Structures are given as C-alpha cells and as structure tokens.
Image (cartoon, rainbow, N blue to C red):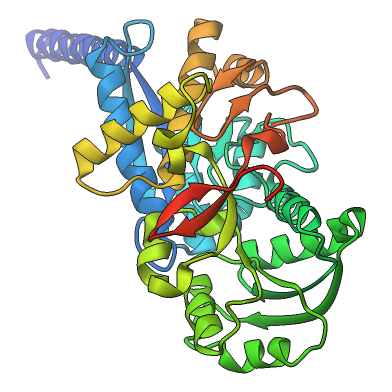
Length: 393
C-alpha cells in the first residue's frame, strides 16, 4: 500500500472517530435533558380497572409537567409496560426498565402480586419504587427503596371494624378472594379483629375466576348470630358477592367491601344490589361533598375535573394513587435538585404534609406510606352513588 493511501486511511479513521465522539456527546446531552421514569401497570387483564386509570393519569400529568417546563428544565420521559396482571411479566419488565431503559425511578405496580414480584429488582438496583398496590406487606417491613400511596389492607380492616364497633356489632362473617390482595387483607382482618372486640364466626373464600358465590354465602346465611359480613377482595368478585348477597335475601345484614373496589365500576357491576354497601375509601370519591375547609377538597376536585374532562370516564381512587405517586416523586426531585436515584429516595422519605387524593402524607425512615386512619372515609352506596357515612352511624 502506498504511503499516500495509508495517510488517507488514517485521516478517514480519525474523521470517523471524531464523528462518533461528536454523536456520543450529542446523545449524552440529549439524555441529560430528559429524566426517564418507569411504570409497570396492569392495563389489560383482570386488574385493568386498576391499571387503566393509573396509566391515563400518569400520561395526563407527565404531559402537564413537560408543558410547564419539566423538572429543572428537563423533560420527563415515561416508559410504560403492561403486565396484564402477571407477576412474572412484571418482574421481566422491571428488569428491562433498569437494564435497558435506564430509568431513575419507578411508579407503578397495580396489584400486590405484581408489586411483590418487582420489589427485589428495584431494591437490588437501588432505584426508588412507589407502588400503587394495597397490601401492607409492601411497606412492612420497611424496605429502603420501596414506598406506596394507597391505604393498606390492614388500615381497611381497622376502618371497617371501627364502624362495626360503633354499630355495636360483635360477630361477623368474612368471604374473601384468594388473590394476593384478598388473602393479605383477610389475614390482616383476622389479626386486628380482637382489638375491636370483633369475633369472626364464619369464613368462606372464592377464586378469581369464580362466577357464583351462592354456595359460600348460603353457609354464612345459615350461621347463627352473624351481624355483618366483610368481603376482602378486588376485581369482579366483590360485585358478584354483592349481587348474590341480595339474591339470597341477606341485605338486612350489613355488607362491607374493601377499598379494592372503590370506583363507580363496582356500583355499575353490582347494580341495585350495591345499595347500602359500606366501604372505606379515599376522599376522592366524595370530593364535591367535602366541606370547603377540608384540606383535600381542592386537590381531589381538581384531579377529578382534570381526569374526567380528559378521559370522558368517571374518576376512581386507583388513578388517584398514580397522581399521588407521581406528585410525590416529582416533588422529591425538585427538593433534591437532582434525578440521582439515591438523592431522590432520600427526599421521598422526607415527604412532609403532602396533600394528595389519598390523604395527607408524612413519611419517615420507619413509615414508607405516611398515612394514618384519618385518611380513610367510610362511604355508603345510596341512590347509585357514594355518600359519606356520618360519624357514629
């Protein structure tokens, strides 16, 4: 090869290297101007009533944040995967978010099962994870990088038993779903019942695919002395229980559902049988009925208006969990003046008096939820809508 050709090749190689270096710098600069946040939700499948409003909420508010200039001038890039309610898929997507997408934080996890599958992935990677699922086991024991926004199943049991005690009931039955949430809440109710003077005298269960619970409810009906029935569960199961309950003529015995069905879709599925059903839920479902001096009123009314105007669908507490989680995360990034995962984690834990749709949140190193029992409102279905149960009734 001639010396001239060698020189030309060296020059060409140098030019290519410079071009690659320049492209890499541009790519890095572009990446520095965005903040990647991950989300794994159950947008399809049996838990889609959770994941769909969560997904819509995140997208609405990420667009709002970006339109307002982003976080410290950087745009949020939301990376969302649909696990269909499958825990194995959720774990796979969690790994992808970390290894391929390089997210700095995670908001999501529609169900207890999918959340629990993802926790080890984010804990190992030291990426903050704010879950939208209900079970207390998500944050008890406390894990350094894991937080959640919904009230826990333990709190739901306590709120229900508080109301049962006010009504001077002492003997109840439970019919529980065998899904992750139903099983977890059932265990929590069994654990806290004695503190409220409540005796569980009959128990039945149903599977996620069961379409008729008449046999289980008949056994409960024939058990002497039952003053109320509690149904830990989510999805279509509680609506089926409610319809069967009415069909068996059991409506004179109060029926309590969990916050796992706190949406208008439960009332629609259960129909007239839902009348009189009580459940603990966030203020969001009765935002317009709150007194004007309630600190949550403006937040829940604004979120409800934004969500319903944008989606043309009724609001649910589940979308509210996503609003709270994203808001807490963005506020933590603002306080940290950084998107560094460890600094953001510290600021999430430092959340104080954040007014959200689920309540007023104050977290600490020993509390990665930050809500107390006052964040729950006891609601009753009347006239096809939610109403606040007055204290003592």
